[in-house]
Length: 369
Image (cartoon, rainbow, N blue to C red; front, side, top):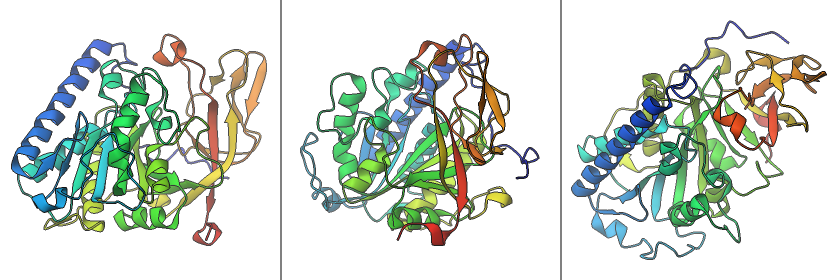
């Protein structure tokens, strides 16, 4: 299997926290969140709107469109009540901040009437409190907190209860995320459904799709896209690249958001932006080939360069755990490697459940029916 070290890695540099500038990062995150809130207020002042939960808004071109929305934010909406055409979310993980700029741009375009809403659209930040602390989450991973019969207590379960009514009546969801490590490409990822696949491809066929079926992505609870799908909608996630703020990610996110708004029929008017992608990943599809649980014992010292979509051979050395060598159980492409660096926030957090995943390429004919 050929190595792909010559690919241009879709990376945006080390985050300020990793460079030891946590205070600077906190100020920047706080400034971005306040900019989002200002853009949200401007959009809500210009168009019929409803604030259903903190740091979220539902906007419509016509006040009559809002009348169909359930007036009780705490109600568990029935599947089939899809009065929100499209929901755009970001910051579901507090350290994945790049999507904030995307939502700000969308809200500003709506407020300036650069795009005309034809159907209700919701925009929401997931976990700003964790973001202000520079952490992925505070009490429980928010993106594993949806759809539980008992959500439990803590900040994230409370936030899941606030957001579930919005997600539950969304026909479509596009959730912006970021990866811990650099990536050779941005990519869509979601539980397999034909509707989700068609939605992603209606946005662009240039970005690869990572999909999975059978078991849930996590045993702890549903992700946003899983919850939307379970309620009868169509949810997908876009991983923009490595955590942090970057103009390249913002442009990519803006392009996908605009194309999603058009693909769902939520807006009209603007010319569709182009989506740039590395030609070697154009139209590719991947699913799991192997998942490596994080082994008991000392921290695993992964070898440098295991970025997302890096190519590995079966039996290739991935790192060391004490005197033991960790090797790849299968060939394919790396996804979500978990480096635990001394002195980092990850070193103080509980051990992750997985060390990394390895993906294999598949064809459309190999996808479930």
